[in-house]
Length: 558
Image 1 (spheres, rainbow, N blue to C red):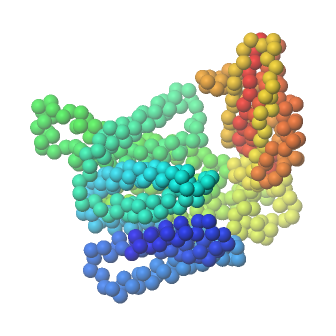
Image 2: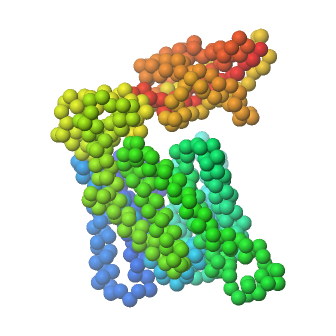
Image 3: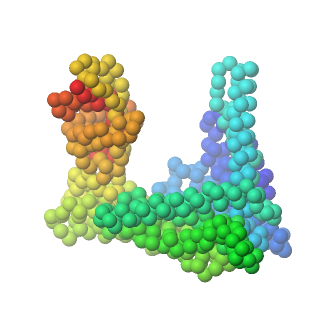
């Protein structure tokens, strides 16, 4: 049934690709079928090879149809429903999606009768085969569409290619994913084991070595860990889980058995045994990295309070900790991680009082109390108030809460702080692009002996905070060639650009192009000139906070 529903969605999607004004199909029928596919995958995974009465199957299917109809109807009436209703419907969708997909994977695993590591390895082997075939099919449909348009149709359109890609994806790729999770009777191919031992596992080791070298650098130079360390360690965890789990299956329960012990005494097969032992110890190497993640997310919460993103960061730390505890208790306990994730997903999306949005709401309300508690706020406190005010004005129910619980004077004070504060953590307002390029196509190089193409690419509050010391890198080598003060140039570009925006996308205007070209020649010293050729900046429209800068130009020396 699931495969038939996927085929129906695929054919319908391909059929209405170029149709316009089909709200019933696009926002009604297709979403209903999509959510029903998710539900039926769960149902069929649950009752496969189980002696379940037809009546119970019918009740489950009827329930899934009702839930799918409810979600689809919410999508159809998206513009007509209250924001609060839409907000809760989105959370219902996430709970339903998590429950159905995680539950389906869990039942597929249980029915395979394999150990956790063996099941993961077999699914990985199936995925390799699927993606090789899928890539070949995509190349094939690309060639077919190109030949058809070349021989039979004048001009070229992507509509045929898009339809073919949709059909290949829906009729082969998606069903193959379903079979990859369920068809695990045969042994994993030798090629998959080679990929695990020769690519995945060594790659995980390299990542861990790099992170530990970074930790050593922090300890030696007393540096503050980078804000990106949380994401990097998360990737290391996922890669490590894949590596040590599948290595256990490849080598056979850690690579140890009586035959291996005998071969070890004879000096044979030392390398596989060493790899298995390293794989067994790799989870222990990850434990110290959790403290880096705790620091990364903890310092942001301490500075600016809880937001949904940081809440999910905390929950992910909980998942990592539970996973490691289950892993150290034995491979037979690993299957429990899926039910644990199902319970956690229900908590973070729907449990009143402790879900991601309620906790964030309460945390930001607490930060706003600084306005009542103190008349004069320091810089850190202003950043807290600014971030909290911006978050609550965009959160569902936030504006009504502010109006009901704060005076007009207090609200004006918050708005003033939010407008003045340019380093507040919670970004708000409309971001626009100020962009112009090719300002100096006719470059006068007389009197100069050297000409080099240079670039600066900055993003985030930390990198764009100090515009007086911008490092320029040489394009071909990537080495820093000089440091330049662009604070005045950038601030004036922001003023002119925002004042003369052509539209919401921040399309370049004559005014910004003319101004940037006029101010683009910046003398570094008597012998050095920096000529700006291209400027691209992402700017928060209301506060004029620069969020990202990309500048290209020429570094000329006499």
